[in-house]
Image 1 (cartoon, rainbow, N blue to C red):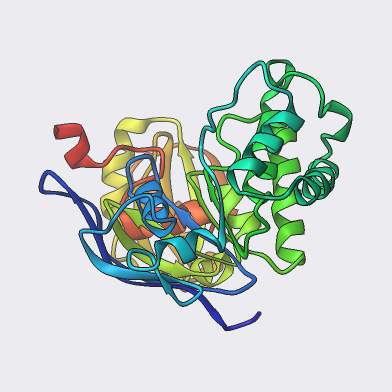
Image 2 (cartoon, one colour; image 1 turned 135 degrees about the vertical axis):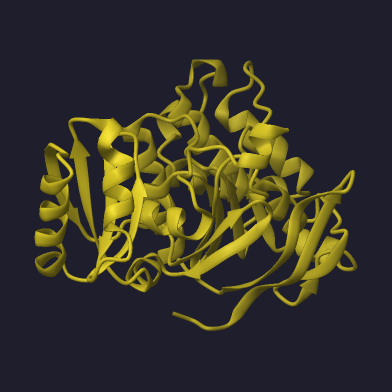
Length: 323
């Protein structure tokens, strides 16, 4: 991977009414990589993205994009980037081609430039056969393809994608993933936000896990999983009421590094399944816990998220619940 720094973020903060939406974020994005900001709704991902694309001014800290300061040189930054928001304001009555033509005029492309780029992009996202149909006849996946074509129209060096597959069906999601990989293969730098663990795992070269406006950990999906240091033995128990006793009994046992309660049983991180399994079975038998199912797996990205935030990505933060 090219180690040229395309984006450099240093101690970035964005505060609203004494609430830190983004709190002291520092990270770098390398040229030609797919970099992900992974976290639940309200984690600060979109705020970070909007600051990088110059829509928001940071309260403090700095961000440079291709060497240009996002505040002092915002015009130069905008000339280098494309942006695909969560929801673009698509006019239902305009055709796909008309959307791109309108955007081309806003970017001050000549008629010849716009016609050439629009033809290339419609082919790229496989919308050429549907280009002259009104957008109201498009499926969710087709609208997202049009969004991506709109983001690529200015021929950006860096493409920012905010929740690129939010609300799409499985097949449409996989197609969007293909386009993102293709853009990387063409040398484009891609920065994306997502709250889908599988999307971050499949697409991102590196990612930062964000929660409560802070970066909890950062690295490639493989590095983050390896760094947990252990595999998972997942128990499904018949009697959930016995679970607290088994959880307490297994903590601090040899070959067991952590124990976490789930809705159906326990997730037990182990140094070695061969060493830990006899201990787990002996403890369950002694405490009268009937095990319905045992599953063994290598660490997953959701395990990484839980290890660094203390909860699953789908769970609310405690302070959010109390608020």
